Length: 90
View 1 (tube, rainbow, N blue to C red):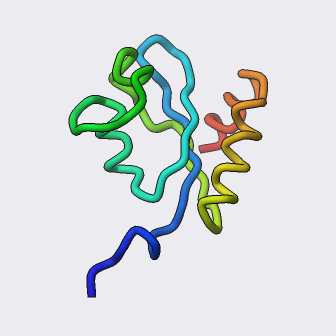
View 2 (cartoon, one colour):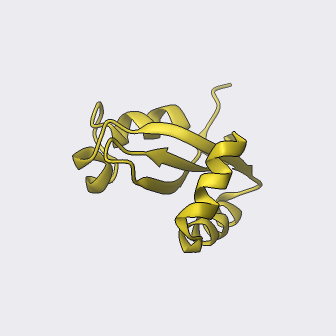
């Protein structure tokens, strides 16, 4: 039986763009999402495609999409120094 997206775990992630900025997002397929952000396949944020290539520098699991989005909001509200602490833990 194939794995569907509903059964895949959710993650919050941080990317470091070529210009040094950090981009935060959520996904249930990190490899695919990174390829989208780097313009290898269709999709991804316009910002990351324009400032790529991007490197995955932090990821953390979430119990579901809603939890991932709440954590994404928390991270986006953090000052850069706190985001860098997350990156340096990884």
